[in-house]
Amino acid sequence: MESLWRVETHAHTAPVSPCGRLAPEQLVEQVRAAGYDALFVTDHYTPEFFAVHPTGEDYRIYLERYFSGYRRAAEAGRKAGLRVFPGLEVRLYDGPEDYLVYGVSPEQLAELPCLAFLSLEELHAAVRSTPDGVLVQAHPYRDYLTCQDARHLDGIEVLNANPRHDSHNDRALAYAQAHGLLMTAGSDVHQVGDAGGASMVCPPFSNGQEFARLLRQGRAAWRSGV
Image: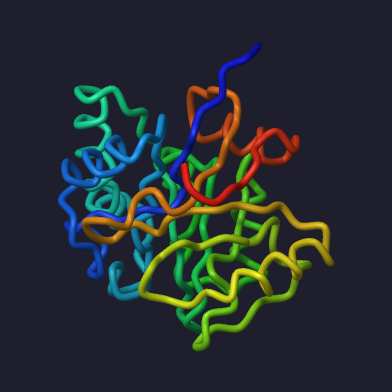
């Protein structure tokens, strides 16, 4: 029987995400101790982080800074036996909603425009312009957010286990089921004690692109806990 991995798909580091309270090394420690096999670092990718609409080499410099938390976590993961992969949590200039991106590598991202200054339709097109990219709206039913048009999404985070928010996960699940969208789950780790609330369970994979393909193939299942 094929072994399955337990994957944390939603987590933040203090150097990059203003709301993060964990150094990358602490994040790895927390996630590994909770029993996961793999981790996606999805730091906040926002208009404020990029400050202006950077292009060319300026954008690549910003991306180096953006992925600094992921790179430190990946190094800590290699030492601790936890596989660490890069993801994004994008917020656009025209609204408070958050979008998780999987399957787009840092190298592929460098060839795209700065995502934070796109419309949702443009963001979806940019993510889908890569071979494996997947766009998932995170916690779409928190009270200050609006669930977006399913035509411009690949998936919905149907279980967000952050203990300091009511994400109305039942409504997110119903929306995903009604529109035939991909479904993900994550703990939304920001601080000590957050890890372990939710996970994806799937066959092993070697990079984010393979994980995105597993999602599309229906071979990654969401669940509460690890």
